[in-house]
Length: 393
Image (cartoon, one colour):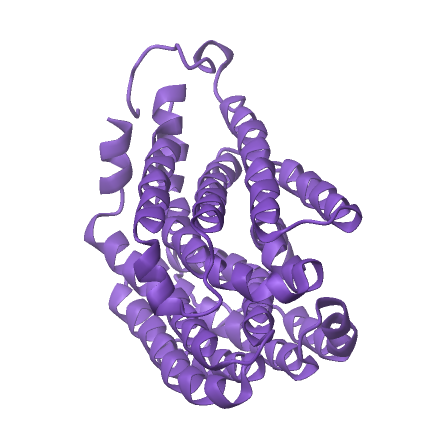
């Protein structure tokens, strides 16, 4: 019952949104795969780290999109403008880019370009949120399709010659194209309240930092082996972002569920799909290696890292559902684990498989704790898994 409700909760509109959302993320991975075939030693790790930073920064646009969709879904159904502080944040990031680049050992120009992208991404997100709230899914899909197309074309052209910096430039161009298209439909309205963005942004930010900590740390920790880890991260992160879209469709299930079985249905679906994806990546390693090229990641690394990212996707679903049910601090376990894992990695020497294994252990631990927090939002007599097997109210 819960699984059926999960899959049918948004119908065709959710399918369109899911597919268009995936196209934007997959475009970046396509460019990264091209860079992997052409970059010199260390270039793949640099590009992977830059992509991870872009994912972490994307949490604010994600929160803006959620708030804009909620505003457009109710009268007067207006499209909101992004908060002014996003431009100040971009300026601060631009100023800090040389220091951050030294910490992450990536080109400073690539982080400067991501600073330029940041407010543009917020603008495009506000426009897409307006489209989603008004159920104008064709416009939301067109925006994402334009961004994905520009990312691929510009990313391939610039990534081959400029590596990580070219990838960052492609992200800027794709986002700018989407924002320009959206401005034709949604010129903007009242400025979005800062408080409406902060809560979701903190949750998404902690989640993305936790999910990408390994690839951010890999260039410094693994040195010569960092490229192998970055190549293994391509299919693993692809699985994460493919399953991450489930967190959007799980929210309606969360608000209606009255039993543990119904509440955990979407989580079980994501874990099952992640298990299938992990098995597929392991079985298809020769094909993965043929596509990605040298250095060849081992089967153990591919399977362990894909399993870790599958668990991270389930955590994203649990976190979204917990927030929807009022568990405002559900992100605390992920933050604590991020700090703990970062501390461990500062003191130990690891090889690629060991780094993936530590990431998997941390993800499993946080998933267990956050799931318990989700279950505590149920009435006490329903919080046990052995509760009555009702579906969704």
